[in-house]
Length: 426
Image (cartoon, rainbow, N blue to C red; front, side, top):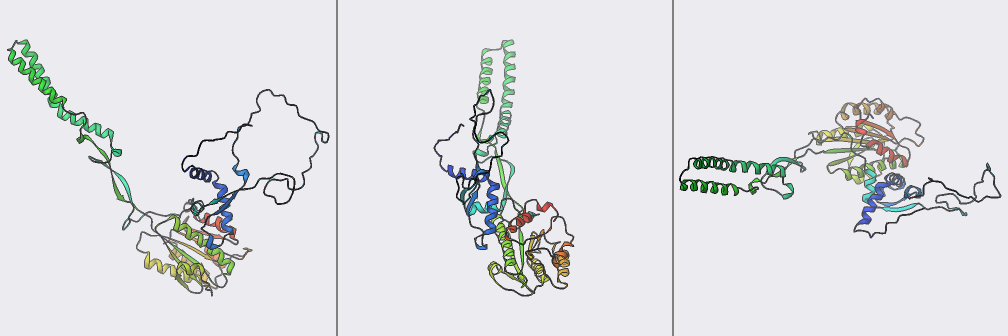
């Protein structure tokens, strides 16, 4: 077997380049490892880096081997224990591959472990996610500009020199300045020919020759390229439509939401918070929690307060509608909402909530995601889930998912906010 080893000295920053190439090459394995890390972490540690383990078999390198071609004669040693067709028993003890901990006589290979920084972790975590159906529709008060071609100018950087346009301008100038001189020289040449044919006086002939020579000198002094000819590609900054969005986070904190269900909901909203603050600069977040009455709270209260009580889902939806009307009804806003609840709504609350959502909120929102955290068995459909299923919404504007365990949060989150979700029906 032939092995090729690169013994060239490392260039400056080569380790960073190699690391980036490694992350690109084993993206899927690293993404699976990140998924496992998220399901095991506490909410406060969700956004930090950590050690990632990749199975050794997944990072094997290609090697050159001798091919089976050609004529080969090989003598294999025989044995006195087995004949053709015998079944060989499996070795006992730790002879398998992997990180087995039992003692034995076999060989194994450990997993490859390396550390992810916080930036690398979040980049892999949210790389292919986006807000569905986000529109760039706002111009007023926006500082973003986009360079746009705006013809040519006579001043600029040498890197923006338009060579073809410069040569065209130079040719036009030389034609404009040299054309009359060339025509005059041609006329004088004809006159000199006639004068020679008519045998005019030598003084007159010399005067014609001197005048022709003077005009030729003038024509030769017309430069091939003048500073006046230079043309540069001109670019101006024009205001670019940008996307402004607001995300409403609605969480049920009633008594039916026990600590396990609240943990699932908070994990979902933690991922949503990290996703929005990392990928978008102009996204506002509005936190609403509700029991039998709803209130707008700050981020710290939303994630850490232990308030509990009865359940009226409609109160949260009504408060959201009031906030939209008061602060985001001027236009130019992409409105999103994510609701988390166990779905236990009493009496007519479920039906009223579904009708209010369908009639008042969905026409105003770009996307509404409902996450239900039922009991761990998940067999019974809640009254709110049943009512929400009857909502007729535009394709890609309303989605519903259920989670019962920690490890389901990340896949469901990716499913709700993957890049192509806006083009599909809920």
